Image 1 (tube, rainbow, N blue to C red):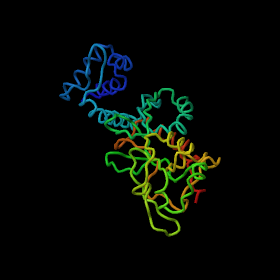
Image 2: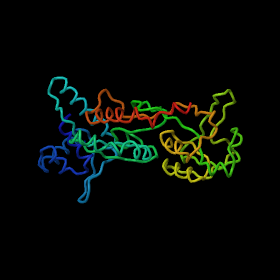
Image 3: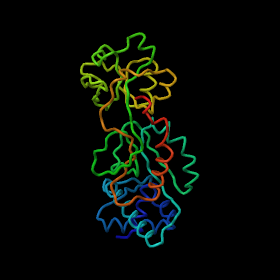
Image 4: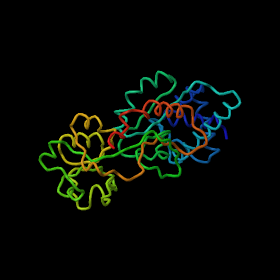
Length: 306
């Protein structure tokens, strides 16, 4: 298979413009179109839909894209092993992450990364709703739960300690729950796609869940920042990641609820990428950068709660 044709396809898929992709690779528009058509003929499928107004990925193109990127990564790794690699890191990196986490930890350090790697462009998909990494064509994603998908690889960025909390004003009005059963008397805030989490007691009391069966889910949302703001405003009791609320705890705007209970799951903050033998240089340097700049942040260290 013509790897230069594959490289053209990947570039065109990222830019959604065949002529622009050709120019980026030093090809005239007619040559780029012909080379892409040749690749599609080899594969036996249309990889891109063309019209007079736009270019878009076909279903077959979306399925082929992660494999095409892997082919190029393998070629680049082989050339590097022979001493022919290009030390300059270039290309567009598609990164999906929680908007709440990205606003606090990722966005502030982007200027340093972009200055260090001027040949890299970032395309950020920021949402607290989890994205499908491979089908979405993302190079890398940040996720804060236990990784179960066998088609993915992951590198741990940090622990993700979650705690129950409420505002002092809410607790002053509704009372501070002393046992898990007391939660049934309270207003609960939860994530729209979140399931009940098992809570275990550090002092030997029986395990329970949050929210408990029968609890009134007064507010259900899909955005962590809004969950935090609503909790501080006094809507009710919620479960939040420590990194999201540690400043509000320190300042007394939030109070920990049922502090003798901890969430019993394997959640952590992971950098996740499609399973492959090699990583492209742009993904590898971004992972290393995030681990170095964020992984040791005191805002992620919940050990002082214990």
